[in-house]
Length: 406
Image 1 (cartoon, one colour):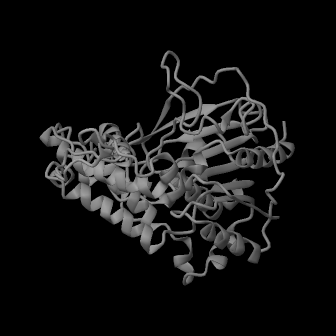
Image 2 (tube, helix red, strand yellow):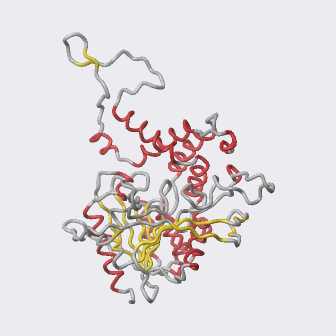
Image 3 (cartoon, rainbow, N blue to C red):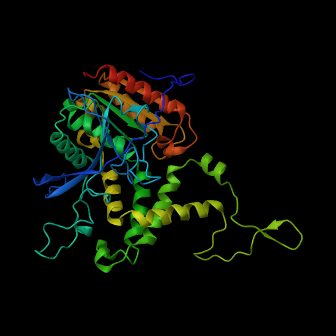
């Protein structure tokens, strides 16, 4: 089914009841086999849950996160202002994914730097007593590995079947992979602003960002923790490059245009450009100031090895590769119902890529709803409050709730 957007505005009521988030952690002693042939042992997953699991354990929704997000999907931490989850506008009481009806689970991926076992944690295979962290020795992880780890957590929570799995961008890839790895455990998949694999251009952007990090003198081959340093310069550049790709040209022009940060008056005449004197500290345009702010902020909280791991997982994801590039054959395993959403100005994960998934699913006669939304915000649109987008998701989860047993 294709959703016609003109006039398609459904209301969703927001609740004033605050949603308080509580981080949790689950340790796993059993090794997790990885796609690379290695295994990860003695690991933990950080996660959060919102809402109540019903008696039939049938109302669970797993939300998968994108590159620099985490398990903190919704709500706020008690006593911590401005600590809203990264998809708090989407998930909560009375919101499109209504936690009055659904039990929502957010899981931090392995290799991340927000609680789950990753490069900053002690390597259990290091010499006894050394307490050496993984650093660059953390094994390569894939989208499929993350899905397997999430499935193990659901086993611990005694949740056999998900009402839905949902994600945007890299999270959408995980949602898609769930339908192929565990088709009998998913009833609905919501895939937003995503793709069946990365284009060569996207892989190229990721590689440039990685090179910025690994060539930073403070990187030390990935073992910078031992040198009490952080490759902030590389992280800043990686984030600036990535952020450019998340925004549309229209948004950048509307928000910044060619505005200068400062204009110097020449005598009594009009404002004029300062004489050209390039240095690493000069900031002449507003867009430069914005990108540097984003880069500086990112370098303070994100781990360089995590960035390398997660962008590689993005690059490697390609379920059709085992079928000679035939996506229709790859998606034949999926049995659940789908909602896919794309945004017209998203050039990083363009609507064309979502339509590839839609076609492959229709080739297999699967139940598919697709919405292509004319929004100006680029890839970041999946995180924003476009009323058409929110209305579509709200309507879809309304329909899911009707099939959830009490």
